Image 1 (cartoon, rainbow, N blue to C red):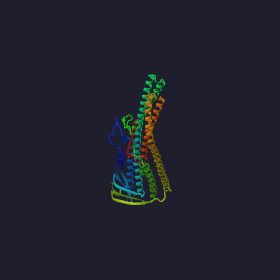
Image 2 (cartoon, helix red, strand yellow):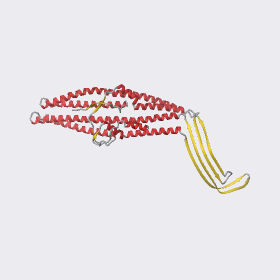
Image 3 (tube, rainbow, N blue to C red):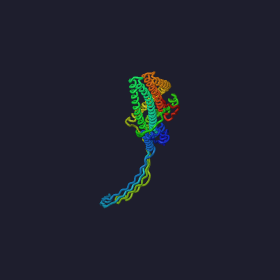
Image 4 (cartoon, rainbow, N blue to C red):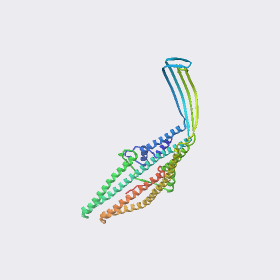
Length: 446
């Protein structure tokens, strides 16, 4: 049952089919592939099954009696010499045969007061395994989401460099025409050629970066590195996040925090379990016996026993060399350590959320500035190109405008990506990675 619940959690974002071969790949499909193929998730799910099995084994050992059935049959053929008190003459029996048949069923049950606490502790350990599996799922979703948007960022940078190369080509054509017509020196033409080659080199390097970004995404989806696909050149930013809601939800849904809480419970239960072992232990036993013996020698030619026997005892430990006391002391120390660990992680979680939210807020403010700056740089470049075409502006003026546009474009798309990156991290920290509501798409159109 637990495994079924976990599998529902694992497949929460599964939509459509999973095949991609030069197909359009959206984020949902990428996450689906990762959840289906990721080996760490499969290992985590199987670990949950192991823990659940251990809990059931523990329940059987603690609350169920042990029942054993034994059947024995033996034969003997011996030469026997016997002397009796009332008959001094020896009695000899050759090939005296004896047969013994024994059947019994024995049941033993021992109840330890700490058994109930042990079962609660095993239940907490099972829940920890389930939470660890969910962490693997959330990390996979966050990793794939970040890699997916990173690929979009690199594709947008490629478009920026492609537009830069287009402007460099236009400048080169103008410089070449002016040089051939005698309106400009060869130096301007050669400089334009150098800048064009430099921009071509940047574009080629960006193609390699895109290929590596695809390989990284394929690795997270656990598919072949050579698998090709196309994605939408858009980064989706969610509705503005609320810090108080993120913080409140983190204390309810953050899986690492929940694990720390359960580890604290485990340490507490371990102490109680050891303390309960001081209480008396009840042992019950019962057996059914059916035993038949036949012999050609001796006083008894046949002996048969059949029936039940049962009993019980109560055991209490009076002294064990202070070992139990030391174990209880160590358990209390472990309990304090888990208390400190929980408090430390709560502080760390709040700090991580605050840092990520500060970066998120700053990038939202930068986005407004970078959008305006991009529009200004774009208009300035268009004017500079026209002035250069008319021979009014120098190549240095045009190149400066071109570089400013390239910088503005890169800063704008990087700001959008960083907002998305922090959004994913905040969703992960608050345990809301599966509940992102998109509101606005950003696509850079140079």
